[in-house]
Image 1 (tube, helix red, strand yellow):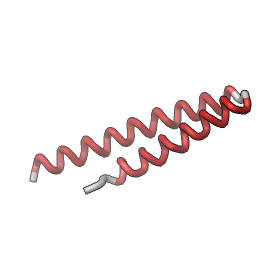
Image 2 (image 1 turned 30 degrees about the vertical axis):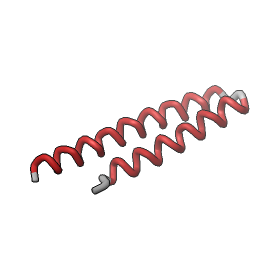
Image 3 (image 1 turned 135 degrees about the vertical axis):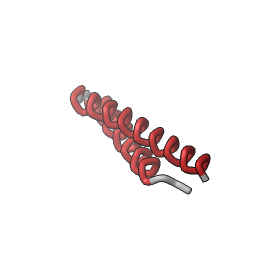
Image 4 (image 1 turned 180 degrees about the horizontal axis):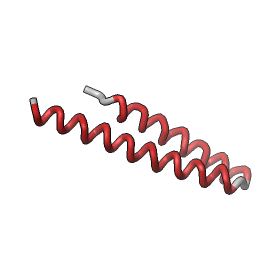
Length: 60
């Protein structure tokens, strides 16, 4: 079973990496920094989703 946080985190991480790459390509440091932050937040959200799924599976 896939948790909502896992899906949303994966999407957020992908968007962040895309923004980071666009920022690097255009020399826009602000966009690059925002992308890095978004990617990191997505990674954390994805980890929370995986942990939640693991706990729910263990409790059953």
